Length: 199
Length: 393
Image (cartoon, rainbow over all chains, first blue to last red; front, side, top):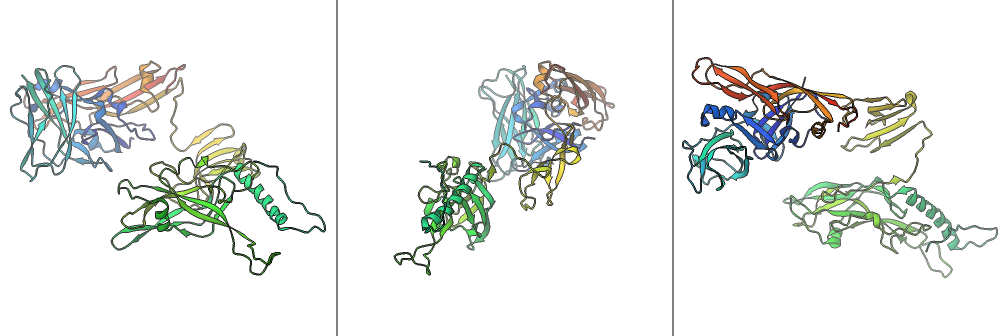
């Protein structure tokens, strides 16, 4: 009977994105996730299907988180974590990481995903606002099999506190025309998938 | 210049001059120093811990620092005895190194050294010399506490050794040999010590303890033990010990040392070569062996390999994998709302050992929309066969 669960998580934000058990655990936990990520961790069926352009897009989407963004954490066996890793996060990453459910609501996505050129902007909205400078990782997944673009950033709290807070997603000006998805991992908030088009 | 060793000798009727009596003492002292210098390795013999005690001015916290009593042998073979606990004097420290505090997150650590220095004792009051003058009849072997700038704890082995035939240094005619006992930091706002550490966080250098320069260590008792501290050690660290003994037809045992000096053995090697380990044995995988790993894993990740199997050897064909995966149906995560039931969509491992395990979820009450394909867990078993002529690690 395995006694531990290994979690793969976004290093900067704590979002858990995969889990596994082993009947034979090494005496010392791995310090990197390289052996379990390969070229990158593939997220399929991630997010919610209504957020995608179509059901087929949702079913076919294969979004890769670059290996450098993924960490590993070992904890005691808990089937609720193993069966639903996406619903968990690691908090207190700088000191003693602990597992927690999300207390904040998923950010609200814009209704019109088409952006303007030549300087496209993309914004999602938090209900309330962050209370301290918060890590966020944006991963842009292109329609072609090009490498994903991962952009770690930080979100500062507004002053004074506001009822809602817009979060701008940085988009490279060089994006080719096509349909894209942006994965947004904001520490403390459920991850979300935001589709957008570059005309 | 090194010189031949001489020792005094005496004859009946000889008038004994003071120099001959002094030479008698020096001959024995020199022999002991050469033994300590060359048969042993210099360092702390016992005690000499640097300890801090919390103190406060009312508004500012600081520490009083004490060097505990103990004995050391320096690199010249000189014995240094600190007979009683000795407080460090903050004003001495301040005058020697003009210290800076650094920041709370990165204080500056100054090394504290112990040296030994000869000094004449007070002249005798009840004996007089030939010219009616009083002279000392004792030499005090004084311990002395010195401070250095950060980094001066490096290269302590490169201090100047006496000539081969010399006795111990007197600590006055040349720079005294420095023995590191710990580190202190400085408050700065008040002239007091802020903290004390045995090992510098910057140089990772700490006190050094005496050793033995020996090609063989032989016991006449039927057992030889190596231990990281004496059996009565009261520190927080576990005392580890290794013992070779003749009991049970000869064994080597390893483990934590109990307060009574016995060893809580976790590893035993018998004289026949049998190895008994209480923990896991990991390391190089034996050629021709089979290793197994199993468990549960998420879709999208790379399949875990048996412990000790190097992915590079799998890629190089030195290790062959036999993999079996099936969907793990215990409480699978399905869509919310509706009445969904799962059907396997895919469950396989590709040539990069990436897991593809997804379930398609059909809504029993809504047949107009297609299924949602969601990631799932899989149960996996990996058997790794290490080539008989290859290497598994």
